[in-house]
Length: 227
Image (cartoon, rainbow, N blue to C red; front, side, top):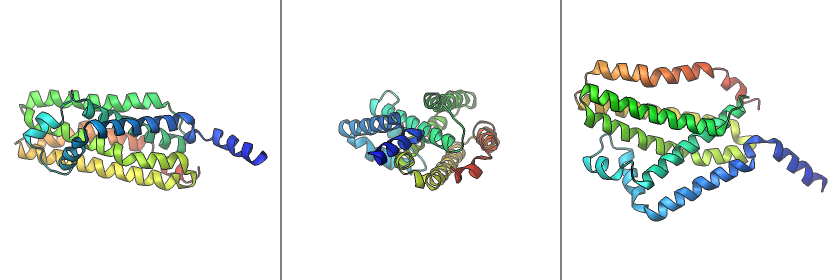
């Protein structure tokens, strides 16, 4: 009895293993199961589009409709899992944060990029290329959420694996971000957008914010392996 109560006490002291984390993970799995049941063909079509350098008109017009509940559900899953991974990373680094706030922040970043690219597409008269880059970004966002899901589960329930799982997750996000930028540059060049505009956009709207975040949390790696 004494050992069981001690174990329960330690579990309660671990914020990454809180009951609400389990509830969030179960909710994400439920949403994925519902999408798989009602729109199982979407997985195949999205999977084909994930690794194509260019998306066909059919994919842009039908498969990635923002009014499609399955597609919106996958975006919600992506935002939730990314926010949970960010919350776990901040907890391990000793920086407390609010999970709902992080969900709102992730959603706000996605919405902000959506509005910015729509505006730039109108100004540069390159709407088709901008729309393709938008939906390419959505696809990579969804892929990041799906790939991080097992990692956040390991972070929650395997305490001794957390530092290494965090490194794998951060490396995965970095690779997907570079892939997003590479595809964006490819799309822009093929659509005839001047290279100087492409470079200016990436530097101002995507690379600079990432560098600011890295600078702000530059002390994180030194803390990870001491938790």
